[in-house]
Amino acid sequence: MDLFRKKPLAAPLSDDAGKLSKTLGALDLTALGVGAIIGTGIFVMTGVAAAEHAGPALVLSFVLAGIACVLSALCYSEFASTLPVSGSAYAYSYVAFGELLAWILGWDLVLEYGVAAAAVSSGWSGYFQGLLDGFGIHLPTALSGAYNADKGTFINLPAVIIILLISYLLTRGVKETARFNAIMVVVKLSVVLLFIFTGIFYVKPENWTPFLPFGFHGVVNGAATVFFAYIGFDALSTAAEEVKRPQRDLPIGIISSLAICTVLYISVSLVLTGIVPYQNLNVSDPVSFALRFVDQNMIAGLISVGAIAGMTTVLLVLLFGQTRLLFAISRDGLLPEGLAKVNSKTQTPVRSTWMVGGIIAVFSGFVPLDRLADLTSIGTLFAFLVVSLGVIVMRRTHPDLKRGFRVPWVPVIPLLSAAACGYLMYNLGRETWTGFFIWLILGIMIYWLYGYKNSKLYKK
Image 1 (cartoon, rainbow, N blue to C red):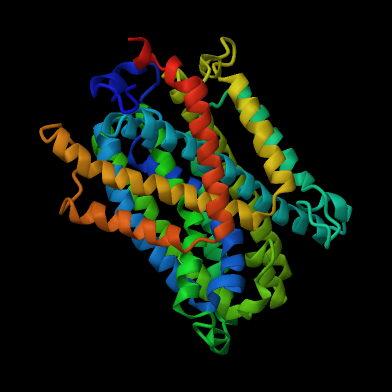
Image 2: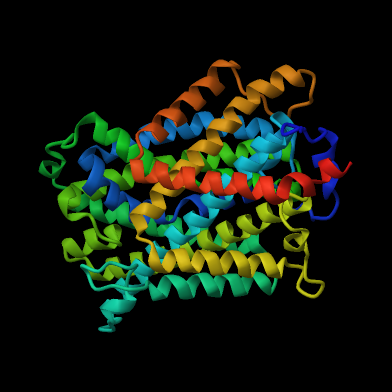
């Protein structure tokens, strides 16, 4: 039984070569990266992480998470420039480690993108309800949040509706996505900068004291939680087949978008904790809440509109990436090939889109945001860890392979990346680890019962 059969290096490059139009450049990729990264992480998770984990030291949490991401981004850049195909880390692992680990990583990415979309939709709902409140419209308590007997909430109806609407949009065909995304990135950046330059005048340095209310352990816990905020940059690798010069443009897009967003995250966390005492930030719309806290209600309303628009594009990217991932896995035979079928009229994978949308809608409707975010973080960290180690393996097994971008100081940088990701995973809670292991065990069972014998490599 060969559980570690590897996909030939030429196979990923020929699987669907020529089927997608190569139209994206470095600027488009940077915009896509910023568009995917800036969402719930900056508009929602900043408040949760400050109130429950790091306090004013949230800025250090973002720095720590950013360092881990930069190291991982270098490793992703080498793979993306070497194997510019759909499937992202799943496709890389198929070549580097073999089928079993590729399946485990692919299954992990299904969790990462799916749960991230559910978490973003929960954040979207928080801002949407805040906007409705400004017009005097209030949803019934039972429909305003995930199930919580103490609060009297049953289902987060706005989160469910936005997921289903995005799913419908994707089934109708996605045109000029890059142009639409670029417009929304301008909106999001404008909103974030508006918050920074308005809020800075209301900062009270005494709110930064004590700076480490939960100690350094709280900073690390905060970093593990806000790692969710950086999920967007790895999604760029799913667009590899549509990039004009992937060897050059993918590394530029990945690293530049990550750098821009890290600076913005640090700036927002400093201003946010400077305006509002960190204990009061455990709300679903902390950025708008901070401005309402200082009676800047009009600007708070603009922030809400921008956040809603911004998180809508994040949902579009995450759900689109999820369907592309399922397409790649199904194409290899590890999931039913019906999921890889494309509707002849709309040129979209309708079945997989509705399946993904339905499952994510259930999660977003009934599961609390904090649990969703932590599950996304552990899934993302695991993927980054495997990709980092994969760079070392590929350097040994394919030393002469043409690489558009090379990670410097191998194996030091990949090992540091893997160690940083492993350390942040270790600091996530027991419930998160339990959920992660249950998900992986379920995935291994599916592979054992279906994927192994239906794999195209098995049939060869």
